[in-house]
Image 1 (cartoon, rainbow, N blue to C red):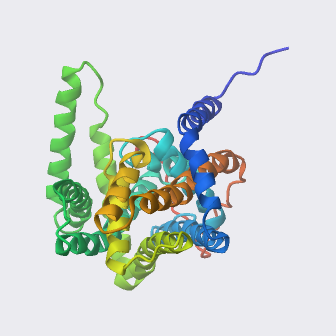
Image 2: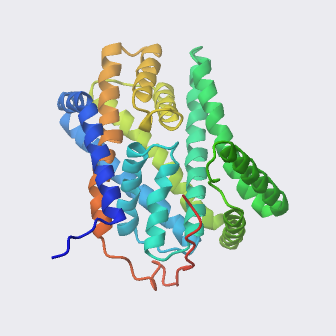
Length: 362
């Protein structure tokens, strides 16, 4: 009788399961504190917060679906929703500045024989919409801190990094639309620089010339598709991106009320925007440690008692960070067993853009 050999997918799942177990064990005290703190809040407001979280998760799946529709990719929400939850788990289990969140979508595209380059660009546009929508809330939050004479250098530095990353991503789309030759020269320079750097380390370069050429070609096709749908076609994903920030802000407000806190709008936006800023710009996965510290610091500096600020921070992080992380691990197994959608149905009656590109992406 032959023994079954482990597949690569099974090995990866085992490693991610080990990472999940390690995270739960390492932060078991924080999870225990979260459960205890939530029991001390007004139960129906905590329940409403959970419903808002469910709406936010569904809205994220709708955002991906709207982008997939623009780029003529399969867009079933019932498939994209668990896939989004998987990204929430992977970004913590395998942190890489948020880019690891693209991997589940890219692997799913390869599994379904969908154009990987198009999926990669859809995720690039998603990141631009996320950062840009959040930047509006961040501006209001930092403005309130400035007027309250409480704006710190580390908050300004983190905001500059975030805006710089967003500007680079937007510039890539802009150059693809109006200066494709400049984009090709720029990315080729980046490739050659990486080749030299990795050469000094005696390692193969992570980016090949044919990958750059293929990415630019796909990017030009994607920009052309965005031009075809026009600015009206982009209103739907923009609306979902703005709604996502609003729903997350609403969760913080409802949780504050559940613990007897009445936060002014400026304080609410400042606390939310700084916490998300350090969720994005943080050396730790998911901003563990940094987000909690920043949120408590902002709330106390704006007049909230430290004990109440700590309770609110634990509750908010428990619902918006740890719960999606746990659901993401569950969805990891669920997504791998979900039957693949019919490739003839992209959710709008049209045919999806099927062009496998195994040499693109991480």
